[in-house]
Image (cartoon, rainbow over the protein chains, first blue to last red):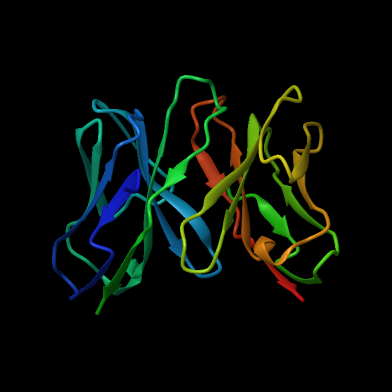
Length: 115
Length: 111
């Protein structure tokens, strides 16, 4: 089984709808991240969480919110989806605790289309 | 602020070498390298930290010039499996792992 899973894998939604993307991990990592990927723009950080009580905004948090329900679960919500939020969304985890020496493990991604 | 990667794209024949560069205008704590194959998630390659410490892939090498805030990824004797998009990520947060990724370098290895 995959260590980092994302649901759904693909989603088409309409403008104005609320949508939640979910991420679960079995790696036992404290740190979790949400990125979006757009062609030509690379990966951009939306939110990150170092533990259940520590959630931080990334570069492009406007229009998004997150919830860290447990160490293993980190959800990303779009309160009112708009077409320019159409992108590939990745969740990632890292162990933390080794002062910047941790690689990030990415989930398989969720392809979101807002029409 | 995103790091700048160059080149944006490169095509190699099997066995050829390539260098991918990553530069930042700000002081860096570490540089991270990931590879993403088409339709897949990014996969970790290397981390290079201030002071010379490295962690990562056995068959891929990289350098980090702390004074110039530049890193280079060296791909030698390229194989078809090296094809993909390479991302560098820079961490200025002193180890808090807040990584800012570049826009990527698309590498294609052909027979």
